[in-house]
Length: 423
Image (cartoon, rainbow, N blue to C red; front, top):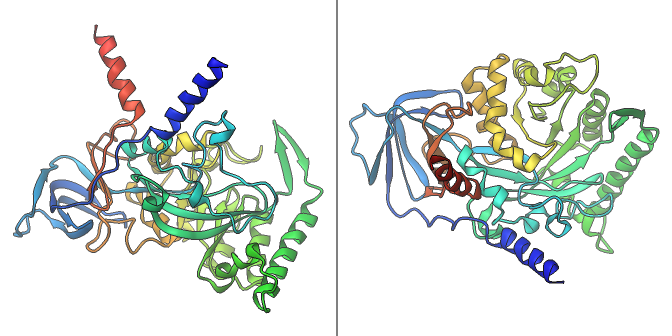
């Protein structure tokens, strides 16, 4: 019994008392001078001057400009400044310890949960979340899993006391998981004999929801009510689909219901449907770059060069980290983007995949995703190339102008055991 109590106490400490104290509001102007500024829209400013106060960027341009420096001046000569990286379609903060059921809240029971809000389950004090910041990942779209309609995501920043403080955009999108024609389990592949039945179920559900919303709405049906934004276009519908057939049918499904604001998530075979996606102005949140090919006859490096193929086709794409150990691996988001450089994209194009493109897809680009006057001062200073794990050494980071801590349980352990090795 004592062992059980001790274990529960330890887990509570891990979950409840993990994060560094969130930074206070910005009270004085800050100037960063001399760095190479990577704007996030493809532009680069050498020897840049960036000033921000009240949480907003007030000036960005050349440091050679004769303009009065304001507040604290940070000499960043030889360093690089980037907009904060954004992680879409992530379960960060919804699961703390995989093996502890009480800390796992990424999915609800049942197939139809459009009214489930991931935001209220988000743990702002997650030790996993705080470990994102030292790599420059400062915002994320917290997304539920499971069923056909898994629920509604929200966008948060990663330095807050609670989910209310963390929220950047509440209930930004509903998430629909399109069925696969083949099932893959433990290396075995089998035909999904229920595919037609499952797609028919989805169509029927949306038909009923549309009829309800167009009627007198009695009795109240909360799941149908929650889809009103999807139908009127005020809320996006993220359709998780990988196969060519699934993507085509998902787009046709959206047309049938006149859904104007959709995004394809995953898109393992999106390179086969580029014309369809471009003609319908549909962006793609692309599967993790560091993945194995989905089919035996695919090119071995297809996941690495997929971003290049879709970018060349004129699509707006972002990178996600869904997959094995996705929460821990989200910190590697900049390095996934860096891999696309080795397979054809320029560094600034790769940067857009995790900054401005993502912000546009999530609908937060008026405030985030690039270093521009009037936008949020959510940015960081790196000793070198932030897309290279060897040189992405962050010295300072800011969220809405607040100078945030870069300390985590990992840095604590590093400092502790580095001293041990010195002896």
